[in-house]
Length: 295
Image (tube, rainbow, N blue to C red):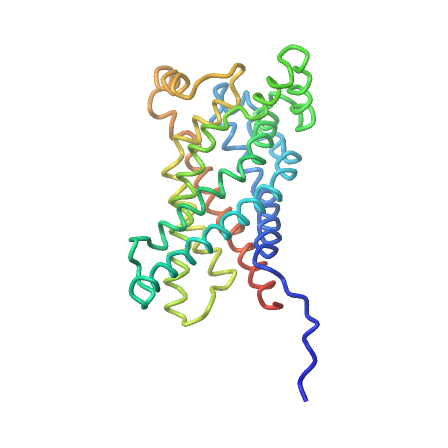
């Protein structure tokens, strides 16, 4: 007599990545928004105190929360999907060539993680950039809150047209991609590599949420420090009264403030992203592991 089929609902890898990513994005943005606000004000061309100082450190949190869940979900769906596909192709090529699952095309897991993470960031920026523009204008005290910042952009339609509003909402798209792709290409291979090392040490099939958080914190701190100059350029571009080309703005900052301006906010940024890596990748791992356990 056979056992009846299990009635436990199966959660697909796509759904796990979607839900775990949404939870992780919302958790980290809500938890660390005050540090992000301080970092934005330190990088503002008007200075820290004129931009608000320590007042209203939750300014812009509304737009951050609107974009956090869909942005993070889109990132992890893209990341996990492409990573799985690249791994499948590598393993198939290995079996076809030598029957032992070798690596005939020279691919390695870190390169796969870089490609997958970079694609995930480009996808996520479709959501992240507009919410970042609105959030940072509220954080820098250009507008009292996220709603006012959004309204100030939308009311320009009569002057600049719908296309102009679209461009304003996506101001800094290029430099954001230039910042996020290198950041992610550093962070995620480090995180995945350290997770693989930890699995070998423990003999477990997967790391715990706490382990993932600690490793994510270390990887995030390294990536944050190395990409701070790009973050400064991105922040100045989004806060500028008029749109400027990245190279023009870079030369202007260098001429007016010198090279030290490109490490402005490195302390809060590293602290914020290190803590964010722990919360983001720890909560993602917790949700992913929890859903994996019921499939």
